[in-house]
Length: 88
Image (cartoon, rainbow, N blue to C red; front, side):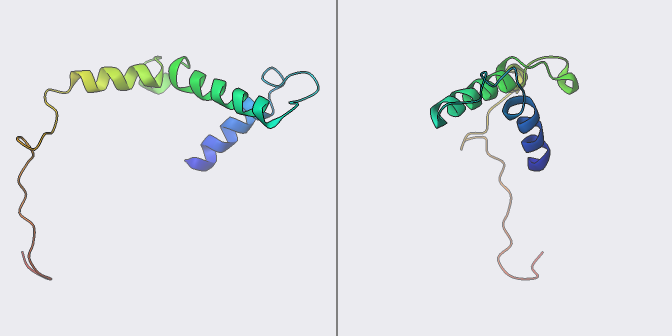
């Protein structure tokens, strides 16, 4: 997955002439700004087809808002821990 994301990033941000100023970036700071803008777009404005054509950040916010309860120490499920090797 990391390799696929890296390829996507290179194609959409680094090699894309629309993202790159004419003549290329002048300094590392220019690249840092381009990367920050790309990450913001990728997470907050890009419409993702697999999650209903909504941006990933919006989907995650909606997902967590719909969860009935949050795990807290009071409602954490108690699962017994095995005490030794081979115990059941």
